[in-house]
Image 1 (cartoon, helix red, strand yellow):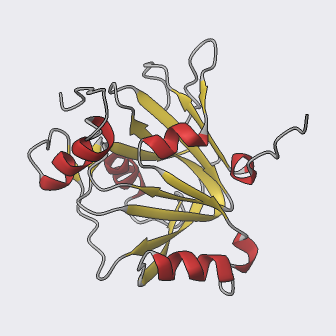
Image 2: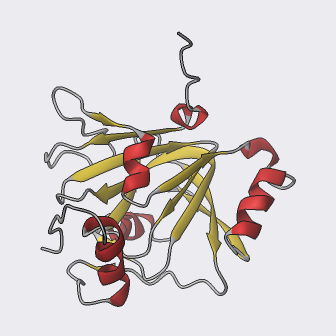
Length: 200
């Protein structure tokens, strides 16, 4: 019986359940024993991902196709590290505040690495480690946060549909239409048999 090909995304994206320790946010924060999640499990939360060639992002046809198909008309870059980001300490604290956006958050890691933490359907934290070549899309309405890892550097392409709106809505913000829509699609799973209440 043939062994299925390994998903190439797994070389640049890993996900696991986090512990609840208050140690440095840039540490991996694995449970003991470690508990990894598949990329399929992230898909079920609405977190989409691709592996792209970060060395040729300017000419990459696959990236162009994703942007075209998903209407990502806006693009810029954000470098997060102590030397490049003004008010670094304050910004990194703000990024790590649990929040949601009313639009997708699209990030393509073209250098370095970092962690995006998202809540699962039972409100547990999942840590998503993205490395060079990883592109992820966090759906509108998902509670999440970001931090660097211990290498203290990421350069990410930011994509957006139309004019960018980066406004974070810190938790709790369950009254927002984007949050209600997220719960309806991914948590209550309209038409499905199971309802998990994650609005708390």
